[in-house]
Amino acid sequence: MSLDESTPSQRTRASPPASPSNTQTDLTSMSPEEDDRSTMRDSSTMSSIKPVMTMLQIDPANEVKFDLVAGRSLERIVKLYNSTTVPVAFKVKTTAPKRYFVRPTSGIVEGRTEVSIRLVMQAQKTATRPTGAEKDKFLIQATKVNATSAEVAMKGFDSEEKAAKAVFDNTMDKTLIQERKLACSFHLPPPPPPPP
Image 1 (tube, rainbow, N blue to C red):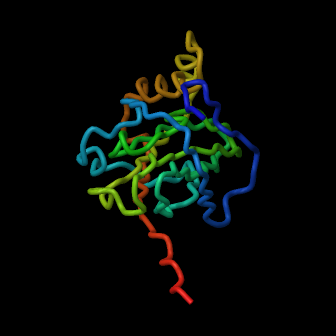
Image 2 (image 1 turned 135 degrees about the horizontal axis):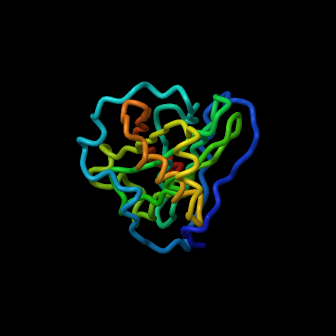
């Protein structure tokens, strides 16, 4: 199974998320690839002062939990629910692009609808936390799509991801961009039962 640029976001009209839904899936056949667009260049990106996230309800809200399993790629689903009546563009970045796939890395969530983001952790040889992974984070950015940015975004772009990036590029007032950081946590499998 591969993840490529054409992977569509899962869009549904739904009620706001009520409880965390960290679905985990085995993706053993995934091949590594780097995507600079989902990369957070350094930790200073995380510390920039941005307005509190109100445009999107994010599930899980603060932490992405991975249950470590040797030899398997692990997928978590993060849901973005647009609680407004206007379209909202989003971008997702990570501090560890070689360890995670993010798909889609950007897009547009229509008013009162939901989009699912796939966060995929590369397979580990052993069921142990990777070195330095305790600092891993995801950054979700959001900004409203006004008439001007919508016209710019949809002109000449062949994908929603590229259109969303254009919205951010054309948002001159960066205080209109909201952010939410998601930390990563890692859980070891339970020890095997003692022999009889």
